Length: 389
Image 1: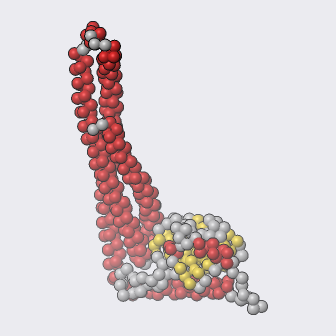
Image 2 (image 1 turned 90 degrees about the vertical axis):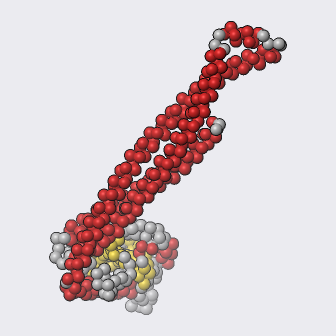
């Protein structure tokens, strides 16, 4: 195999490894996000455990944690597979280098033997002087000079290849060390997953023994959510209704168009895991019990986390609702965003606010620290996760 061919093969192997390293960096970012979310959920579970009748909330957070744990395991599996693939590729490169070194070694050995046979300089001179003519003498001189140059060049190539081989071996050793760490982390995560699934089952058993009590809690929650929905509808009607003089309220169509064009790109009002998604679903234990329709999403947060506006707009109202503490409604033309379960609200009705501006801090209610966030187009609730990036 020629040197150029070897270099091409090595370059291809190294280039093939680059996407894997980049992807590992992306996986690291995802892992850090999942671990951050799980730390928030851990805190929620600890806080909830101090409250009475907490099994339903504890089950919600524990199941979300289990879901995140499974995603972490998937990340670990991908990382281990990628490391194994990299190790295999590097070992192939090492085999090619060894083969090249063997070939170069044999060539160098032949050059050394030739030089050794002609080691007496007088023989070199006689070889040149015995030429039949000047041209032949020059060719013989060129050959002997080339032999010396080839030896130096070959020796340099062998040194370079040995250094590359050593570097590749060091890389493989480091990759193997990382693979051992990843496998241990995966094993630890699997143990934690089994433990959390056991805790989840205990909560399910506990809920199953006292259905009447939790049915009452569910009914109370349903009333709170209905009251919030009615209040939201009232505020939207007020923001879009005609004035007492019969003139219809003017809607900022440009702002509405800007808002609509940012679907899927809006920033999150706060950074945390979604524990209650948009829409309708059934009770996790009483499978025939339908839970109230969620017009928004609930985001678990650390206590006192700042909640920020997702887009430019105008504050319509700031209200207080049972079970939801302080709530802020922001209008963006024909769109509305609704931020609930707040404390220390820093805006008031009529304020014009900018994207990223702090509206207030998340409140802790009955041990739960969550932001309830809704997004409406006129009088129709939207799934916020389809609008947020």
